[in-house]
Image (tube, rainbow, N blue to C red; front, side, top):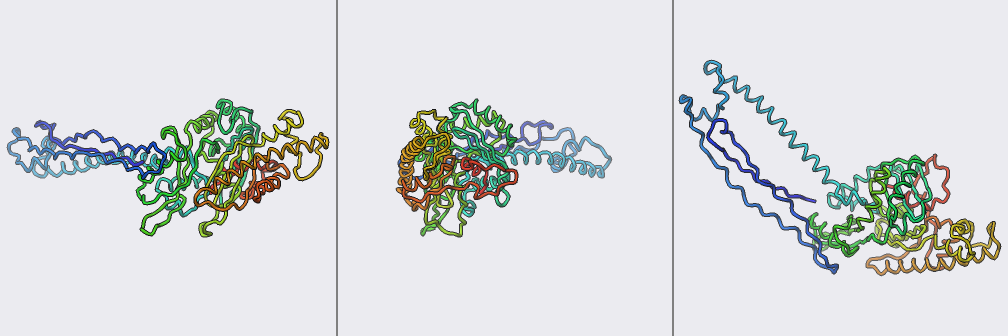
Length: 522
């Protein structure tokens, strides 16, 4: 934000005594900075909000000119001498006219000594203020990691470009995914090709996180503290992923605005369309994806906007602080998911002809993300997860849901093999229960795809890439492809990273996709 600090200084000579003859400066009260324009409450389209009116400051009155005080103690001194020779020189006697030169020499070092400390004091606070202005509050709380081209970033407003470049300097990042059933972490060394140097996974007590909402911050803080200690994970350089229906993501165009402050006001105004909540209760972040010049010479910018409830983020941040974890940023799981399974297209490749759809199936929810190859065009959190299959199997076989998890892992939807511990009838009934539940999941996917394609400028669907813990269910991709009618394939979270030598166990790597994507820097 830009602050205007205006200060009026009055210069006056007060009194007529010799010790009060020096010039004094009386600073006027500082004019407060201009308030930011409040966005309109209505959601309906409206012109960009007008910038704040400049603060009117009355001009400072001219300095009062006071004549030099009359000198009665030394009548021999002439008026010009009183202007060039200060009073302290008249008290020194060096004998004759030659004595006037030594006082001049003593005057110069004194003036230099008084000026040097003042210059240093004035520079130090200015440098601190400049550093504080480079990283706005919303950028520290929510950082973008989506697929954005390099050239659009350079054309972005100054503050956004600086923040993007600062995030690129992070070489070692630990991605942290907090799910409904487990904690997952991945350490990535970003030096050329991202290298995965450590992974960790641990079950989380049920009820701590439900549907992306943190219900028990104290329990999560204790679990995180033990998790990082047990696996010897660094507590610095951690990026947290979040996914919730109370987070809005939109892309839109803004044209005819070149002023940075006016552009930010316009984006904040459009934030109400993404998530209509009071501005003081929201965390807003945005990024310029691309720019194009119109025929009339104006510039139109493509904006990616994220709006989240502040209390949603604060609960996670407080739990991490209590666990001694220092976050370098918070990212959307959808952005991390796209980074993990697909490398961004180069700028010179031109626009993409088909959209890439990635779905990460979690325990009680799934993250749905659509990309044009460079940026996240659409994302949604689906209230469906692998736990729904456990419940379906448990009801069909009359067992507990916890006992249905190993049954689900051993079944195959494309063969009639009978897993150990089950009869042929039980295995067939369990498969049919899974297929019935997958029909519900397929309807959710089709509804999301149709919603995306109803948006202006949407692309055709090229394929759906599956990841998450459920992707290891054999025959899942083929079953969904038959239900949806779109090509579906399992994604490889390790496709973009070089696997380090210390990583020995890559089992169930699908559930680590988001954590790996959180650690990748594009």
